[in-house]
Amino acid sequence: MMLANKVVIITGASSGIGEACAYEFSKAGAWVILAARNEEKLKMVANNIKSNGQIARIKVCDVSILEDCKSLIDFTIQEFGKIDVLINNAGISMRALFKDSDMLVLQKLLDTNFWGTVYCTKFALPFLIDQKGSVIAVNSWAGFTGLPARTGYTASKFAMLGFMESLRVENLKTGLHVGSIFPGYTQSNIRNTALNAQAQAQVESPLNESKLMSSETVAKHILKMVINRRKYHVITFTGKLMYWVNKLFPSLVDRLVYRVVSREKNSPFQ
Image (cartoon, rainbow, N blue to C red; front, side, top):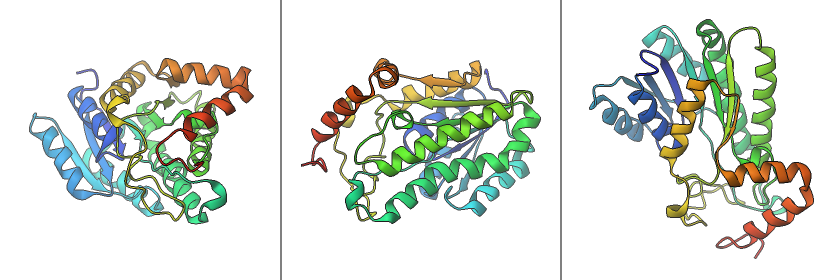
C-alpha cells in the first residue's frame, strides 16, 4: 500500500491508460477521483474498484472547458480535503494532413491535450504544493519528434512538454514533483476516436492494436514514476532510440517516420 490514503485525480479515466491507472493506483492504496466525459463508463470503472474494497469517486468533466476543470478540483477538495497526485492523461488524436484539415481539428486537439493539462494543473497546484505531491503529464513520442498527419497532436504534446518543463523549474524549491512520461503506441481507443480532416472520429484504428503495448503496462510505469518521483521517462527502447537519434540525426528520423506513417492502413499519404 505504497500510496495509502493518497488522493489521486486521473483525467481520461473512463478507458485506456486512464482506466488502467485507476486500477493500479487504487490497488496501491490511493483514493482515486476518476474524471472523463462518459459518466456510464466512469461508473463502471468506479464500481470495479469499489468491489475490491477500494475508494473511488467520479466526476464528469470535459477538460477542454475551464469551468469543468475548476469543478473537478473543487469536488476533490470537498470529498477528501487534499490532492496528492494529478495525472493529466485525457487526450485525443488526429489523422489527416494539415493542408486538408479543418482548423477545428487543431483547436480541439490543443483545447483538450494542452489546455486541459494547463487548466487542471492551475486549479490543483496550490493543493499539490501543500502536499509536496506530484503532477504527471502523459505525453507521447510526438512530444519530441514531429509526426506527419498529426500536426495538431504533435503541437499539443510539444506544448505540454514545454509547460511541464517550465513548471518543474518554477517549483524546484517547493517540493512539488513534476513529471512527463512518453509511452509508445499503446492499446486504447485513441486511434478509433482520432479526428479526421473534418473533425469527425475516424472510428477504425489503422494499427493492429493487439500488437501494441498494453495500457496496464503504461499505468505500472506511471505508478513507479510517482513513487520514485522521476521527472522524465521514455518507456520503450524504440522510444529512447528515437529520442537520441532525433537529436543526432534529425533528417534520418524524418524519413523513418514518414515511411512508417505512409505504410499505415488508409494512410493520408496514399
